[in-house]
Image (tube, rainbow over all chains, first blue to last red; front, side, top):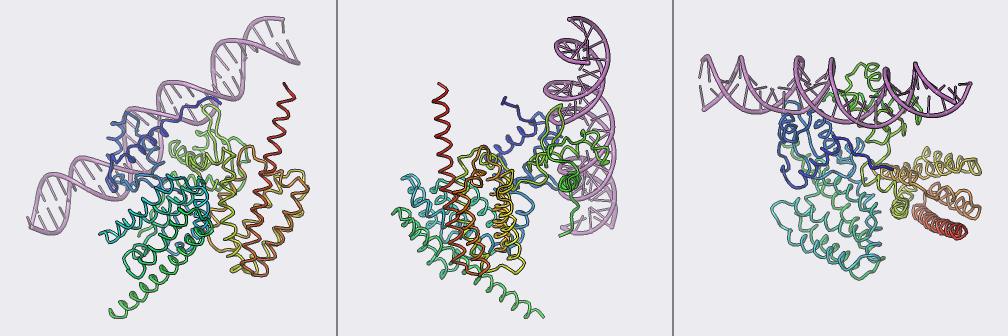
Length: 248
Length: 248
DNA sequence: GACTCAAAATTGGTAATACCAATTAAATAT
DNA sequence: ATATTTAATTGGTATTACCAATTTTGAGTC
């Protein structure tokens, strides 16, 4: 099969994606106006618009009529289609995502314990240390991101690329959920201590190359996270009801 | 939040998707030329082109310069991004997909046994009967599709929409793999008999609302499928080596 | 009637230009 | 200093033209 030159719009999209990945424009920044950017890249405005639409559909950019084009993410979000937009915008699917995570992380932990290299193990340990260091930081979302990085390091150690892709997307999905209480997991002491112990046990099982122990540690961790989120949701709901009662 | 009217190109894409789903154009058919189709839909050619690009990126259409636009699929393929195209086009990822299926189907079977309604159970049984009826049909891919439908009926019975979405995509991925031996699973008698028994055991466990039994049946089934595919791959490899030896 | 080749037509891809509608910025009036 | 109005800027859509690849058609020859 001959090498087909990609279409202009695809080349422009790839170039813009590289600029975004390099941090040329910060998260939340407004891109130059289309007319200006087209001139800068020496392309036509329709071709640029087509490229921008690709990045918009990947969840990286957002355009507002009359207002400009803004950076939402500097890297593409894993799954992008209407149904996943629905999952992202409706917090009640968070438990569906957790259920599937439960299955996948047990599986990932098992394979990671079997297949991890010394480099993989070093990476998992580094991520764990980073996560401990970030505890108590100003922004609990830092800790949430470090948590995701730790779990993804384990998935990487499973050496299953399909699993990694799906898990990466689930983390994007989980983290982008509107109005979730995920950050509260990292700020309540009665939750943080057990979480740390679970993370340590999971890491130790992988370092010891013990698949069944790793699977059980992963599953116990997910049960705990699920139960904790339910408890936090219930607390939030009680607070809301109490506030509404007082305001009458 | 006010209801925002979608962009013209998005509306056109949705309309074209509906026409495709209704079978307005058959698989492999060439669409009317862009200029003609734009006139038919009373839209501008750039807007139509943008809509077509969306369907092309969903894997539904293919365009050839000077040649026309052709129908590849009448429904969108589950995940569509470059990495998943890689998985689709490289058969060695089939085992990665099977590993993840292993985890997810055990989980799905468990929840299906817990949550299935009478309708769900009737659907699972109907799919099982259909699958039995298709055995020995001219085209073993009919049987492969019926197998996927049976498994997806079970996932539907789990009432987890995220899981259903991911599994649907994995089946699309598995079925679209280039040069796989999946169809051979359905034509070798020594493979078909155990497969049927496993499907029956899985269905019976769900109908009995026994989650642990369902999980174990699903996992045993996937182990068997994995082992069988490896055996078939090995047979194929031996045949290839034998043919090459004879042709020297 | 069949085959070959060249020309014409048709196709998708790209671009320039114009205009519309929404938003933002700047200027004017109080 | 604030509010309102006007102008400018922005993204969205459309028309028209042209380029390059492919397909179709017509002419010439055997």
